[in-house]
Image (cartoon, rainbow, N blue to C red):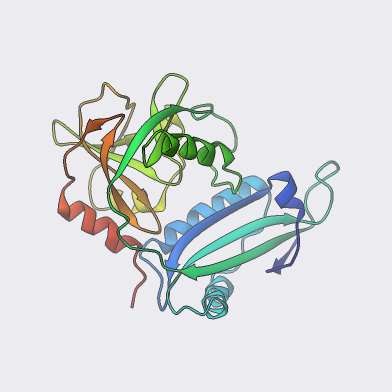
Length: 256
């Protein structure tokens, strides 16, 4: 199997779902979470039978994508997509590497309110924790929450366990001062910002739901770092620790 950089048109993986991706901020340097992005992308690619590009080639491609996007600093999405062959008869013949750079969005999108909505999360499978491009359910639930006057959806399992928002991990502060994030039963996608925070602060994996003694909550992703959760299902929450918010935001900013 070989690598094909930025091919045009619709590929096999676009139709079959044999694709994975990661998104980060870049330019002129890379964020501290870069090794975590590489680790997750490599793991996901291996599960899907895709090749992983050389790190130096990937760095050069990121710079080219920023240049093509006419922005010195940008949001870069890296996709690995199956290419060639038939999913009915055998593995892909090549792996396409696609990169797209866009301008960096507002670093602080402001507080958000969440509505818990049942989803298909929590059902373990070989790809349950792979970051797949096909996340239609997440966006359908987000639109449903927004139509009801909330900012985003908090996806839950059939049992009612909290999992994650449409494009972000959930981190909460408990009454006893501990930090927690949804555990394995909820099958949340592994986030690089959350993983980076674990290197600095202890975070428990545990079952969380509307009965949990949550004092504050934030959403974590690789573009804005932290987004404060103002309320869940109409229940107001306190402000998170300012030092934790700043730490998460620093982890996703590209080095200068």
